[in-house]
Image 1 (cartoon, rainbow, N blue to C red):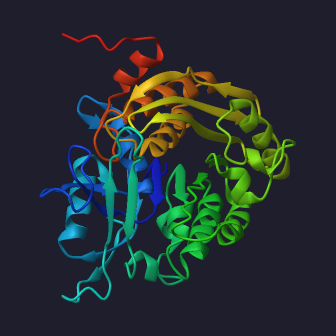
Image 2 (cartoon, helix red, strand yellow):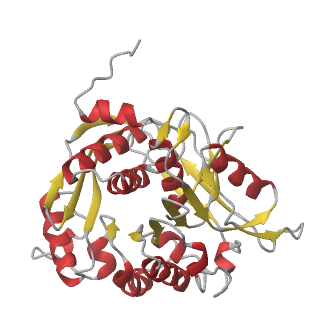
Length: 353
């Protein structure tokens, strides 16, 4: 029996957000949170599995943190939601910040002004991680391992460590997933493609609307559809990618039509070896905070596979769960499994009493 049901590797950031759609530098207050694609998945999976107050699935996070208040805040908050943080590599704080933990500043958009995320994550502990610093074969005692293109982009060796971790997880008998999560502010597409192509032989489930762009594969309509929000375009592209990489058992993506920064249409889709599956479309979703919605989708897909559900049930649940994530401030989706199933089954927003 594996020690954990789910583990992920990434870099967490302290998130600062001005309230009430204010711009950074405008207000006197910043709200505190945590931004971390991979830790988001840990927290969400833990939250989805709660029964009688206790998470049934065992989740764990792997990262490297400096031992100061930011690191302590991240560890304490993750543990509060049932995530095992005992595998975190800890570096002593030098009292100056030559090595630090990352920050992220988020403006929540409104109307025609989009949300805006600014990274402040240079010289972080994860970005300086060295080969061999984590013994992946020993650490990855898990049923499922997940990581992303964000952590791969951060430092000289982080891309190699992502590939090494995925390879070790497969050798240990785990299912693996990789969210391409391409961020143009962190690296260029050619660098992202190099890591993704090295990682692909060790990936079972691939996430990301940007899959074609990062992997350099386009559908028959051409490169203009790299980031298409049309489910049919994604299906065709995913079929080509899964033909090239026969080890893939599934690909999934969230599809967003932006009407305003506060009103979006939302739908999710997944291609497996059994067919193409599409969630209901949630129109005119009113947005409290959209950051982390893609991680909610990925977490729900992974949770569904871990629980052994059928593909259509998985995508329906993932669509509802990730749609509801837009209603919660900060990255973590503090919506219950029951609330997501109620929406997936056609529930309304009437007051529950």
